[in-house]
Length: 203
Image (cartoon, rainbow, N blue to C red; front, side, top):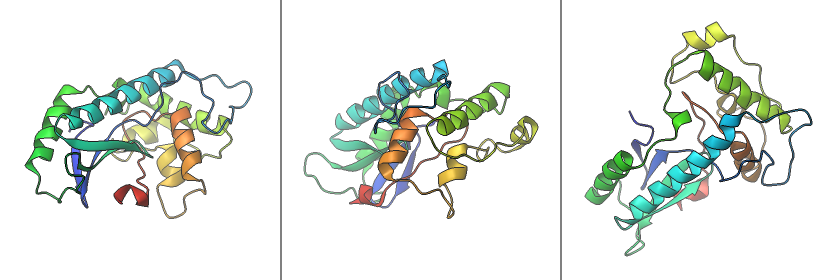
């Protein structure tokens, strides 16, 4: 399915989209500069620009249907309420939400780096570059599997340093601000993605 496919959860809807800021530098929001000698791959700056445009496009599209949406930590756009009355959406009961999801997903182009579902040499290299970026910004990251092991895995569960670091019960300690900053500096590339929704997103 398309990356913007909507998934029901409680009284909101998530669309997996890129978390990013319209910036070409790799300095994080909290001012942490990458290690000397590390050079950001060219695709990362483009990824940040495309992700920002995509998120803003989706938010604007939902607004046309009277739906208020916002970007949150981890690369998601959350539909919080109807803008005309501010009430939370009832799970599965709003036909306008379904119509908006179908229309907006068809109109707003998914960023290029998120559309790949192929476990090939190029996508593996981007995963390695994401890990290198994370390390360059002062965080420890697990060693990646070999190219062949990665290719032999499922596209939906292929190794991703963010998933390994923050996706399980033994996840590394990091604040939401630090994680948001890191995800912006080191954007993910397909085929798999890490997304975290903070508790206050549902309030």
